Length: 433
Image 1 (tube, rainbow, N blue to C red):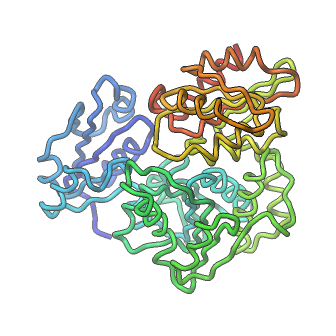
Image 2 (image 1 turned 90 degrees about the vertical axis):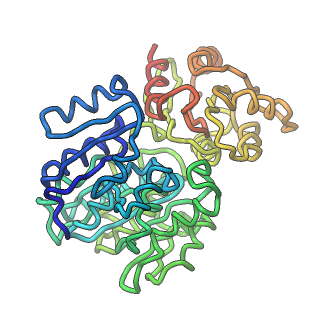
Image 3 (image 1 turned 135 degrees about the vertical axis):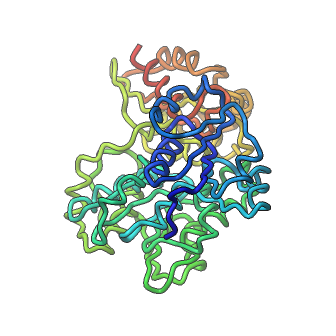
């Protein structure tokens, strides 16, 4: 691996959630000459910049300069930046290598890697798998979940296992490596991120990079209940193992929903490749309470339970969350920024099984109007609430003991919130008022 000492490196995308911060700090430790650039203003990024105080880093915030991408030795891009970005195109024309934080880690990782991807379920499956394996060996969890693992590289050994959640953005950037993990886990695939990838086929193609470069010595762990995930078996040379919930011994879980049982089955199937048996996996999953904003019980009052599933940013996920609870007991908050995904199936399911549907955000009016046209018997009433605070006021008036107030929007948050985490945090705050 080439040394980075003395190399001029541009970090494109400081961000506010750790990725750019961690890679900038690590590059400094390698002796690189680091420049960090971000289109957000210095004011917005004040906290992120503070975390790099005292390090020999140059900053250009509030925009980008083309020369920072062409007159440098390496660009480390945030995976949120599309590969079609004109500045990255300029870097390629100038023969400047483009990489990402996750690629820098994978190139240097001394141990076997398990990679997990999917449109939904990948974070919970990653966390479950890490918990199961950590009972018998040392594991390192990272990628699209948790922290950067670059700083941990000196402490890793060949006997360890790295458990990486890999997004479609990350996998698109990793294609150039011709790399796939020793064990690949695919949870479920549906349409998403069409704005970034440009088309459903391009999104799917990026996901396939998880298995595309595997060999016959590797393993592809695929969800048999999702046709798109199962089809990945045609894309890999690896030994394929299917997981599902049908005819499988079930785990006792604290997390509600059949989709979480499926996540546990996927995690166990991958762990079994490393010799873990069912009882060991059950013991590790016994007290697993899930991840924030992923169908998480956040409050109970007057017999009403409040669940935060703000991570649900596609319609399929909103339906899966509702189906985790009894019919006509769920008062569900849906809507957000428009990703141009079909909503007919979601609206049909909500109409039939929800007690009430509270619609918010840019898509709220359309969802409410679609639900109002429902011909379902005992159809759930729909309310066009506009914002989350209004929805929560109506939810509290509507809920009776035994009901569930569920934030599982089925849409991204960017119309009214910075991200799904902020949306979930606001739901929790309003629930506890």
